[in-house]
Image (cartoon, rainbow, N blue to C red; front, top):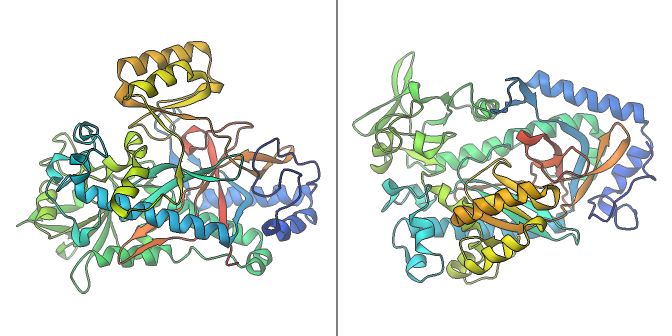
Length: 475
């Protein structure tokens, strides 16, 4: 397949440098592509699509009137990361998760960081994700954020930036695992000769981390799902199956004497650890949202009594608020007395007068985000929007400045992607997964999300994005 017509178009491309010369870690892949016909590449892509459907790797888009399940399109050109780069990412992510965990423990207990004025008190205490019932609690082993999916991007200079912290129920890890199996079959010889670090042991590592949260020798572990209609149900069932644990929903569980039991064909069985994939406030109608039909009455009391552990701990959502994100460099400095290894994207807080003035005057050049929205919703990409949208967001910001932040538009790096016209660069981000048990461990792979539309910067699956397998090299 021809690659000599490939254009980097002023972006930082993961495979080709600014002079369109192949980067060393992609050389083996390039020589394989050059020996493979366009027809064969198309057949590999078709086969990957079919395998995804056969595996049930689908998700629902709630606002889609069609109501159909979609596959997260998996492009067959992998993203390859050399080991030296990965080591930087690994150390930066470990530092960040360590500091955020200390932050969560502090704001629900002594609140030193708030008293010292490092983070504004009202930003935390008035946040809808700051859960009052968690005040004074310390979760098992002092860990709040057991599973994190941190989103990173790379600008046109090739520098990595943290875009977002996902500490409540980060999704997508099943796609990382299944994509690896599919792409490995497409390039078996290349995969083995390059020395790609494995991700297949993630379920075993996840189970070990969950078991660590209990003091029992053989704790009973379960995955708590909202049910089959949830957009990530494939992932919930997949991870339960891979770990060999029960997949349960609220109706399967009961509480007695501050303990949680699962209903089985042999009667009630106590459950010790739950990997919860439902929102904090839906977990227990007695402690949080009384309207919740998904939760288990009394489960939060069992948690407070120390009879069950949750991953992630309830209350973690406050730390991945987009306004709190702006303070993470200060949080790292405060708790660890270190400079951040990985930088934040420069962020303007509309709650601060000077920042707000700048945003209102420069909105056409900025990305504006709602602080508590997810999945690419509640967002304005200034350079791509028209004057009417700019004006609408100016009014929204003036009406509720605390609810908005703004960031410069980053170019986002590109990776060659198979299109009907051949290989073309498409913008990507990177979501590595971090487990926090006995120690903090970064899984040597990631979900690379790709904006499939030409020129688009929106990589979210719900907004038409796809994915790529991410190969982290041993060398």
